[in-house]
Length: 279
Ligand code: ATR
Image 1: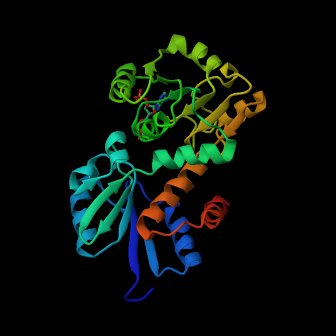
Image 2: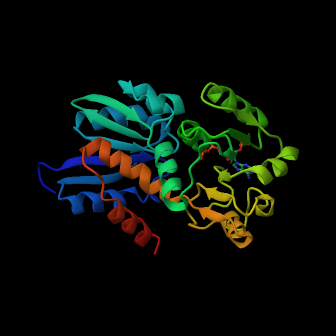
């Protein structure tokens, strides 16, 4: 690090668990880019000050995580179409004081699906569990892959109804209730958990019974800690292909790196850094 080091970081609350600094600093080092990436604990009340500070100090970019992905949009000068449609920003690029917001979660998710389980979503039936920020983040990118139907299930049904309504112009999105979920899963090509059920420390919790999935289906979980949730373990035992949250995390970082630097990201280096950090 010297006086020319280009600065980056991730803001969130909580933030100390983040694996982004390890992944990004390793990517910069590998590429010979003079840059440094830190993790910043920013509360909701501090969000505006943090963005102004980033700008004042000439940071080139930020990643934005829970709980700021929606609120941060109010502080930006321009929002990329994908982030606008998703209703959330996870990557900011500072173009000479002009702040541009992107969402790389959804495109990162779809790319990791294609690469890790070779799933082409065109014409497929997708079941999504959950209707929070994580579901919103991937829905726009999923819809663009032209699945035949997306079915949303959520503990709080009207949240799912609102989300389905927001995306109804993009593709066929409908809501299934608790009683319809088993049948929906038995027809699905992929079932995606976007809820926090199964996240550490609740290692035995499952969002649904994996026995409901057909054996040819893909079980996908956005949770990346643990790397293999109880839902994925059960689905694997059933013979399904499984897709964990680490790939989405890596690819959201890959796209952020490319927006910031204009260079292809060293994907394998980033993956190795993340996997090694899990121990
Ligand atoms: P995120 O940004 O991570 O998606 P969120 O916006 O708080 O976080 O959404 C969390 C999602 O997980 C929601 O769909 C939530 O369901 P509700 O809308 O009913 O709150 C779901 N969720 C969290 N804990 C859950 C649990 N124990 N059982 C079922 N769903 C749960």
